[in-house]
Image (tube, rainbow, N blue to C red):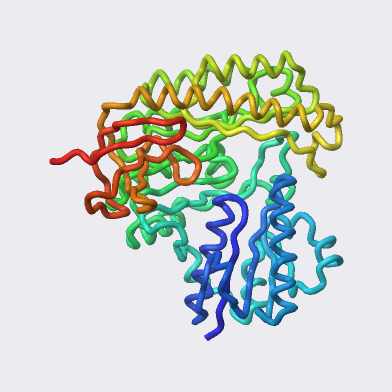
Length: 431
């Protein structure tokens, strides 16, 4: 039996692409593996990320490592796909001749053909789940129509292409039938979902359909753009027990002149209005955001404005990235990378240092309260779970002593007994 090992780097959108590809290979009779770094396979496919410098370096290092494995005779074919391959295909082909093929983000049929198989159109909504079986990501669109000056994604993945509600429902129903309890909606921009297909923002329509899948208990929303966010989604979140009171909505900055140079399409006033709507209509909502430090022209005054806003607003979850001056972006063409790397990194450190204090205070306020917790795994003498306010891998976890039998993928009522900066401790409430 031919063995295929797919290595997925980068974001959860890449992971979904790999899962679709794995399902095609398995249906064709291949033995499939995912992220199995130790076991040799006859075919290895590396699904790369090419978004920022660190991700590009990780992708290149992984390719080079498997070129060496191929030279040692541990694999027959090596293919590279994904964002790095889409963005730098010509350069990679000229420098890495040992790779048997480079494929972009839309090339699944060609990858299958190169590996000796072919695309089965009847399986386009099938997935080989690589996450724990009780949660999965649902990619609802590809590409992006936004014009953020720092972002290379539109140039890599193209304009937004929404998947139809019908195809997404088929995929979601298949995932639910496999035991998925938590469905995490992802896209480069959830906000604009459907504008290309239905000439309107159709995220509310999709959510109402997904709510009808009985087996799903949690629906979580990731990566929503602030400009034009549909207010109906906030109403649905406030009234539906299935939609988690959680929103991932990257703001990037708060200073008006930085937002304008970023090409974000909104100012501080509009951003505060949207965020205020979430807090007003869903008082216990957990808002996750991402900010960027060291964007070209960011002054100390701009940075301090950002710090004060973050201190005052107190996001429940926050990530921060130093700006990366990426070629083929408007910022690269039109703006000087004026903030020294050391300053970018120091500002990012200060943001996270402040957020740690905020997170600790918010977590400590949960001590003594009872929460519905989904158990993800057992590890190091604890069961590790999450509340509806936490997404897997990036947010808080709830640690429960493994002195009783709990089942991963099941929900339990847990009373919080302790709190750290990014973790909670708790005990299962006896019924």
